[in-house]
Image (cartoon, rainbow, N blue to C red; front, side, top):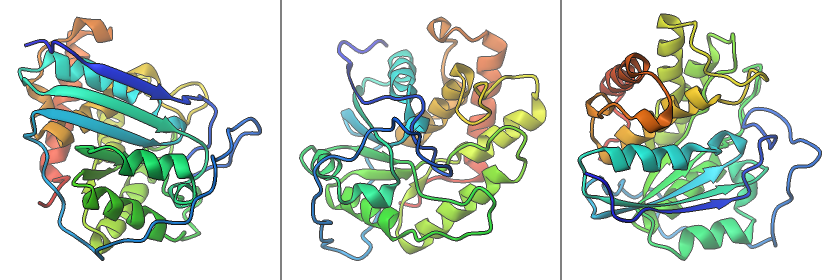
Length: 268
């Protein structure tokens, strides 16, 4: 069933912005007007389950790694059998999640709309794995989302090209956050690791070895589709418009659903 209306909004998609585990480029946009960090009402509330709502309103907050994800999500939802309508907003800036607590645009965007889901990317991590960075900022964003009735979903980044330990390591950092502040976790890095191990000829990275190629974005979007809708990605029909052959689409769907079955993203 096709949706009658899908609203797509985009903000500041810049391909060379700060990587979650790297450094900012010289032309990365600055934060907006500073705001006092918001005060939490609850220490750790349960995760709202919005998988069955009539309209998904999805806020995606992160850096350049979130670029292009919402457009693919729209296509996936439009091709599913769900009658749910989708409204997406991508808020992409430089900086880490902790920094954005003092950014008035980010805070206001979250608090002024009744989002069904809030995807959070850009927890600061160490590329070498030798440094442990604080996670209180990410925990605060999770609780702010829950106080608005939204389902928070952490977005652990996919591994850089050739790094066989990074996907699991970054996922484990986000598991540690969820142990302190209840949240869903999209196992993006674990899915990428599985696909790379089974089909190494697939080009999931851009030439920089860091950002996702269009093929990689589709794989990541499939993960979020299943997490948000609680509907198996391997049940989606062949989608000609995403320009990936049927065999690869089927393979992606199977791996996503398999990894999510092994690593349940939400404990409602």
